[in-house]
Length: 264
Image 1: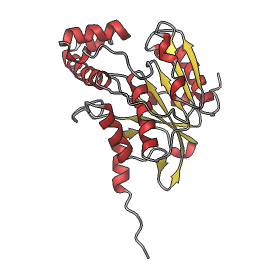
Image 2: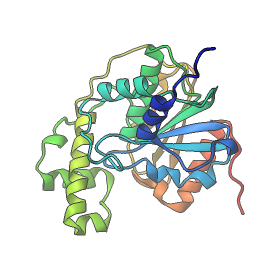
Image 3: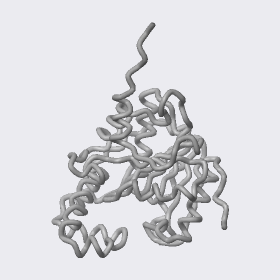
Image 4: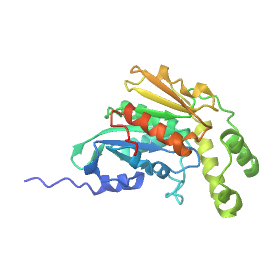
């Protein structure tokens, strides 16, 4: 009789890359969340009550909380290749599960490139791509933000996307951490070389605030399955407004085919 397969390595890789709060038994779809520059995908785990039937997963990148001690990647291609090689999306235990990706800003680009890497590897694709506040490739970036001195880098970040939390501005250690993470993420975006491939066979839903560049919504050329776009009130972090967050979660629920949250 053959021995049972050793799943410890796979479980360790999942724990290193992903975290979740909701039990698997209560859900039917896994939604992997990729964070914005300088952010932690753990922010999105708080959306659980607004997404019934969905298990949210935070994608934890090296160099960002809670993996701050690790060296961050400097190229998106290396990041997504390692992610796809080391973990099985939509697989926990023996039974495969349907899954989708959500990414905000830089996270949208990483989610998109991860889906393409899965296809190149001949692996299962996400059911849906939910992409927020990110222009579609090929990117039109300055290429120099990651080279700026600390004060200029923070000023550029705030000019583009709004002010940092006051606690970060007031606490030198938090400010130092924020600068390091923002610089690493700017490097990822500004050195990314997009390689054209066939469009994905995955439906795409895009979101952006009404004070943002509307070009961030136009991902239609990257999918054969249609691109639906939504504009919400606000700026780059429109979803931090509780009212707009409720609107966003309702749209996300409908996009992935789960029930929309019920108002109480």
